[in-house]
Structure formats: C-alpha cells, structure tokens
Amino acid sequence: MPTQEAVLDVLKHVTDPELPFLSVIDLGMIEQVEVSPEGKVHVVMLPTFAGCPALEWLKENIRSAVENLPGVSAVEVEVSLAKTWSTNRMTEAARQKLKEKGIAPPHTYTGTLDVSSLQKPIPCPYCGSENTELRSPFGPALCRAFYRCNDCGQTFERFKPV
Image (cartoon, rainbow, N blue to C red; front, side, top):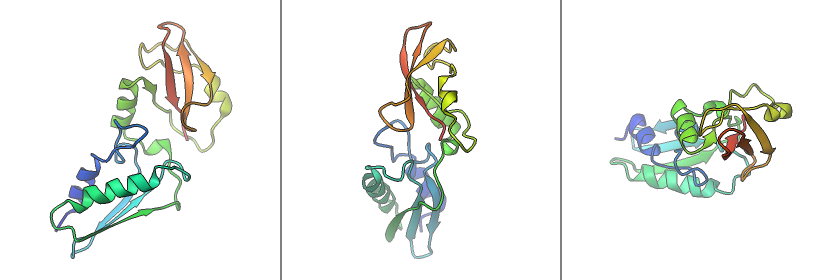
C-alpha cells in the first residue's frame, strides 16, 4: 500500500507549467492527501488562480505521477476552491528557487494587496540592491510585476504577495 509520504514525495516532481523549476509541493498547492487501505489515493489541490488554464494539465500530471506508485489502485485529484491559495503557502525552498531564477519572491501576504506597496523598492534578486523601481504592475501573469534595478541594470519580475 502506498503511504502519504510516498505520494507527497512523488508530487515534488510535478512542476508548475509556468514556473517549471517549482513543484506543486514547493508552491503549497497540495492541501490534502488521503490513502485508503485499498490503495485509493485522493489528492486535494488548491489552484494558484481559480481561472488557471493549466488546471486540467496539473490534475493529469498529478494523477499520472501518483498512479505509477506501487500499490495504487485509483487516483482522484480534486481541485478545491474552499480555501484561497496564497503566496504564504510557498516553501522557503520555493522562495530561494525564485530568487535563483531572477524573480523576487513575495513578502508575507497580510490579507490585502496594498497597491502602493508595489511602488516600494524591493531587493534585486541579482545583486541585492534595494535601488529598484516598479516598471509595470503587470507581468506575464496576474501574480507578477516587472521591476528594474538601478544599480546592476537588470530588469526582473517580482511575485506579488497574494
């Protein structure tokens, strides 16, 4: 019979299509894993965005990864909207991986996105300078914005706290 730990371990290899260096575990998208004595696995996933066009892709990749575990007889992947996903669910490893890829990680989300906070300088993921400025509050996804570092000249994305 598969264990909950084995399921969570295999899910560390199911990546986000938009950020393929981050797994669904890194992002904190897995809310619950249940394994029955008969080998039936039920995974509850929180989408990062309710209207995410990659939900079916993610569900299928989760299902495929889990059903390859020894002893699994069936896999159900449920997308839950009962809770809202937040960047606070990201692991420290995820935040470090973002920084390594040149994306400034989000600060702690406090319940509301203060748009004026986007105007405040944030540390550049390349050089660490806080001499940065918002270039556009809209990036390639709703949860990201574009910044420029005035010291090293790099343009970079920031994951908005949501």
